Image 1 (cartoon, rainbow over the protein chains, first blue to last red):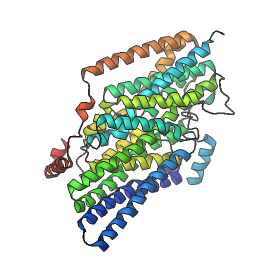
Image 2 (cartoon, each protein chain N blue to C red; image 1 turned 45 degrees about the vertical axis):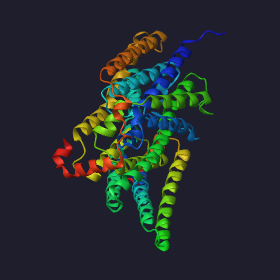
Image 3 (tube, helix red, strand yellow; image 1 turned 60 degrees about the horizontal axis):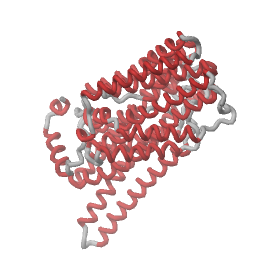
Image 4 (cartoon, each protein chain N blue to C red; image 1 turned 180 degrees about the horizontal axis):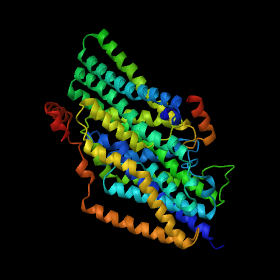
Length: 97
Length: 402
């Protein structure tokens, strides 16, 4: 009760989801990128399989690069922090409570 | 040439102290960006801090919008105006720098932003009483994010590390370690950039606040002057470049034993939480987030591998940061006030006491110095790291936690 009164829960959920997609997503994507490259290396002589592994790596690489680009975009476009006007903040808290 | 007024002299003191604060912020927080990359040997210590310094410099210029307004909304805006307001900001900065240097001496990562907020609150209470502090916004915008952000980052890093090690099994240790080390360079770079954007702008905000209080820039057509941006960017980058080896050691080596998949997970989680929070307007401390990330990465690999004693020390320092910086800010303001409200003599004396104390701490720190060479793990090959990891897994959880 106290927590929901003091925390802008709508923003909090957005932060949690974005952090999970960025934090866990990039780690998993990067892992599959490495795995794809490794398997592609082992699949020499099997062009089809090799192309498939490279495709997995490529897609994961694009995801990682896109995540970095979104991060830099977020830095450049971030709202004026930190001072939410007390009145506006109170309204936001009320609507989310 | 017109003689400088008392307010101009205090303004100069504020600007110099704000830039010094930014410098301490740089070396205090270098650890946030590069500690895990150094700990795993992904980067040589000097290379890591130089990369971080350059990216902090760039980061300071990235955001075109003005972050700027630290502590606005937390204390009554009226107390920050005029010459008295300038002395208050000065005392607050002295409190923040003092706490940053004390925690640096004791090798504890703590939040520079919280130190600054604490300093402002302490000085405000002495200047205008507790009525001038707005406690609800303080809880909403400072304390609640400080509790939640490390927890969120720890959970994200834990899940990331867990997934990373599932993939490491498929990849083989040697290949995985080599790959994740490369990835760590990118993730450390992103955290450095985010740190420059977030923290350099806080100091820009303090200097702008002082310039507004002194009537040098308009509060209605507010824009941070270029020289302020440049000074802050260079100060934070220089602070980063000298390398806060003491805190890097705590963050990278003492909190948990970090391997490259963990380091990559911790940094990715930290960058995501920091950027998402600042984008959605939730101010938070980079230090809190990264510490949460490192702990999460320790838990994600093996539940017992976090050194909870060190984590406990850090958490204690976090709890005390606002009150302790507050007490020092209050003391600084109280002493300068003895010489008259907004007096130059009072501010000069406090400035001299602080400079003397800072010098003494630096000298004391030389006795148990931690250098870049002590932290260099770049000679550890992926094969060595894989063997070390296997040996650590073979140990009992109690042994790992010792």
